[in-house]
Image (cartoon, rainbow, N blue to C red):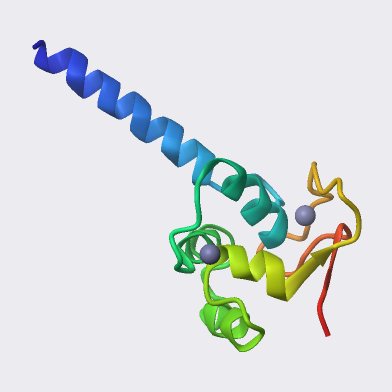
Length: 111
Ligand SMILES: [Zn+2]
Ligand SMILES: [Zn+2]
């Protein structure tokens, strides 16, 4: 097996995965989770929520705690329990201010 081809394939896969799980510019948290969870299954942690926070709002260190206090103990639960989409079509994201962890106008928060 040709090592350089394997290495190249691995780096292509890494780039694809990175692209998939990287928040898009001005994409809000629920739109981001909704988009990524279409392709990637929830792993029962707040991994994607943490990735989003690190990429978009690194200062929002209490984000996971806030999600948990509203019933979002993993990424899919954040979508189910914390935010509610206003329509069946939540794509594309309407966009939020840079550094904000608020949802865009396509979502509202339960309660
Ligand atoms: Zn889940
Ligand atoms: Zn959005």
